[in-house]
Structure formats: structure tokens, C-alpha cells
Image (cartoon, rainbow, N blue to C red; front, side, top):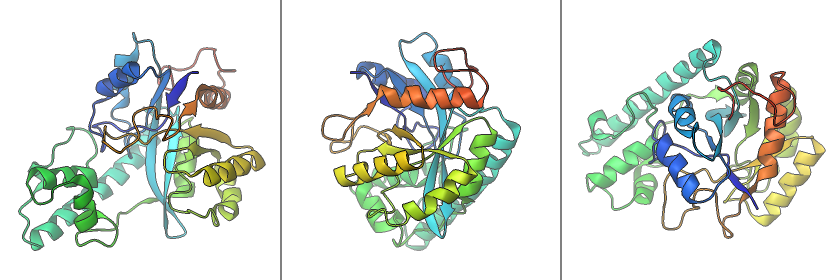
Length: 297
């Protein structure tokens, strides 16, 4: 069976691998499709597309936008959007400025606690996005903590000593922004922040009205019960089913790129249906016909 991964991050946001290294790893693992969905940036997509051009791998451009709704965190994935769209990039620059200020505020709090860390201690792609994982890795390198997980637990998670709230776009605006750029908006890992899925049934009509196209259902942290409930909600609201590992780097206890029998995998049919939707949105016909190179390959 053909497996895919529609949720990955590179060094252009908070992943440990470059877009090229992600593609090489996907090929090693025998994946058929790979999507790059960096946080609040599309800067990695040109190199992602260029490197994949002569590889036996289908790739899909995307993004993951950090948003909020009713005072809760919500992440919106966007697939097949035109990464050169002027309005999209203008909005992303505003989000990136807010993220940069949050990083500076976190570093200030760490300094106030006696931890001598500054922006130059963080390793990141020059034109990429910096986030808390970069700070966590720097704290490990500096010997302040012994692990990435300890850095988040002691300093960076919500409620921890150096945590700073981020300025985010409203989820409905994020969905509309993706749709206007020709993409398909998908709610990422719905059960992560709503474990009992009590709130999602009430939220979905509003999200769908704004243009939500799908739910990320195949996800390592989703239980079997959550998975089944999400499938029912997707069918009820005629939403696409997508999935991915949310891959940042290879970790001993983490889900590998593309998943495995323990973490679960995403079937190729999800990609087919997603591309059908994008193609119809952009007037390119059904899956398998020509599509703009900056949407998917």
C-alpha cells in the first residue's frame, strides 16, 4: 500500500531537516507523497519543489498557520495554495513580526532568570521562522537543560517560567486567507486541544462556512476513539480526511516520517481527494490533470 505524509516541518520553521533532507528521508522510507507545512511561512517551498522535480516522489506545498478561536489555540493547515500570492505573503509577514517579538520576549525572561542566551545562540535558516524549538535546542546545547523535553517543561510550555503568549490570527481569517490563495484549509490535529471532542461539533458549522475543507484525522496522537469520532464528523460535514505525522525530526520515541504501524499511517487516497479538491478550486479539472507548479507536483 502507498503511504504519504501531509504534515512536516523543515529548517524554515522549527524542523531539524532542510526541505531537501526531508525529501531524501521520504524516499528512504518509501513514501509516495510528501507535503511541507512549515509554521507561518512558505519560504521553504521553492527549494522543496526544485529538489523534488527529478525525484520519484509527489510533493505538495503547504503551510501551518498558528491561529486562535474563542481564546483557544487552533492550527490551520493550508494545502496547494499559491505561495507567491501577494496578499498571503503580506499577512504572513505580520504573523512573522509577531512571532519574532515573542521570541525576543522569551529570551528577555530567560535573561532575567540568569540564563545568558541571545538571538545569536539560536541556529536557524536565514529567511526562515524561529520558534520555541530553536530556543529549546539552544538551551540543550548550552547545558542549561539535558533534553528538549526538559527545556519545554521548565521554561517554554504554557505556564512555564519563560512562556510568553503569542499574537495569532483568528482561525476564520486564516481559513479565508488560505482559500483566497487557492488552497485547501484543513484543521490540524483536532483532538490535541479538545481531547473529548466536545467543542468541535459546535465549531464546525462556523469553520465550514468560512471555507474549511478538511480535518487532519490520521495523526499519531489521536486515539482510536478520537479517530472514529473525527471520521464521523468529517462525513457529516462532507469534509476531506487528511493526515500526517507533524514531523520535526527523528526522535527515539517519536513517530517516524510517514508513520509506522504503531503511530498509524495516512493512505494515498487522502492525497488524491485533496488534490481533486484543489484542482476544482483552481479550475484545473480532476486529479491527474495539469495543475500549476506552485500548487502541487
